[in-house]
Structure formats: structure tokens, C-alpha cells
Image: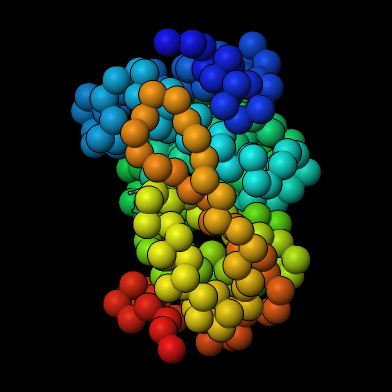
Length: 238
Ligand code: SAM
């Protein structure tokens, strides 16, 4: 298999320095080491980690462009995907990681400390809570999430956090086009406008990957997000 930086260049048009590649490779190896005693990922081999976690996370940059200087929030980050990968690729971005499960966030803190990443905030919280807090509401240029919820629900988690003119990016599998259609109502109510559903081609995998990009075009009404648990129980629908 080619190196991570070769694959990033060839498949995503992204350049990684030798230091960035080494940091990402260490992160992937550390994930597998921790995974022996704690369930952080279903992905078990270094090759799969490289493509399905690292390269897949980097693919976000193909729709956002470089994130240096931007304020970014990753909701439901788990073991740090895509947030920490984006931070390694764009060290001058300010990153907030939001995760409901504390032990996963502990792993993220460990990775950031070991790699000397600064400008990272770790929030052990639910998206619905921080979406109502002044310091986070409509405060981010970009809100991202991978494998967290279906789009109508995810829009209620992410759009309250995005500033006017900013974007939310959802990393999705093959159901993305249908989900995007089904989410049009929710996206509109929350102040968003669906901009594009972009297919992502990655090597060595059969899964279809998409990036769904929604722009914030109007303020999110004050009643959203609803209480924790309600968005997933009663997704916004016409
Ligand atoms: N984004 C990571 C990835 O792609 O590897 C983790 C995906 S994992 C399937 C989904 C994560 O989202 C879980 O760690 C879960 O605890 C978190 N999560 C789900 N709903 C959440 C919410 N409302 N607020 C914060 N975290 C949430």
C-alpha cells in the first residue's frame, strides 16, 4: 500500500508534510493500542485505520479548503474523527471537540497532549446542550460530524453552532443523497441551505462516501436545539 501522504496527494489533492504524516501515523497506531483495552473503533488494522479514519477525515478539506485561522467544532467526535485529523493537517485552526462519552474524550486529550496540539477545547457534553450556550451558539465557521446521526437530527445538532455564512459538513455513506432530500425541511427551519452533496473517492474501500455541505443563511430560531434526546426521538419533519 502507498504511504498516507501519497494517498492524500493522489486521491484528495492534499499535501502533508513529513511531520504531519508522522503525527497521523502515530495517532492511528495509538488508537489501535488503546483499542486493545477500550472499545474505541471497530476498525482493527493499520491499513484500514489509514484509509477509513485518517484519509476519510482528511477528505473534509476537499469541500472546506484549508481550515487554518477558522473556528471549527466536531460534534460526536468519538476518538477524534474527523476533528483531530483536521487539526493535524491545519495546525492554525481553533478546534472544539464535543463528545457525550467521557472515556472517548480522554483519548482525544491524550492524543492532543502527546502531539503538542494547542488551541483544542474538549467538551464532555451533548450537542443539544452546547447549542444553547452563548459561547458556542453561532460561534463557529465550520461544524463537522461523522457517523453521528441522520441528517435531519444532525442539522439540529450542528446548525445552531454555525455563524451566519458558515457551513456544516456531514460525512455520510451511500444514503447521503436520500438523507439530504429528507433533511431539506429541517435544514430550512434551522436556517440552513443545502449547498452540495459531493461524492468522495478513496482507495482500497468499496463503501461509497459523501460530504454533505449546508450553508447557514439565516439565524437558527431560539427554540432549537430542543432538549437533549428530543431531536433524535422526534426529528424535524413537515
Ligand atoms: N465521529 C467519530 C467517528 O466517525 O469515528 C465517532 C462516531 S460514533 C459512531 C458517534 C459518536 O457520537 C459517539 O461517540 C457518541 O457518543 C457521539 N454522540 C452521539 N450523539 C451525540 C450528541 N447528541 N452529543 C454529543 N455526542 C454525541
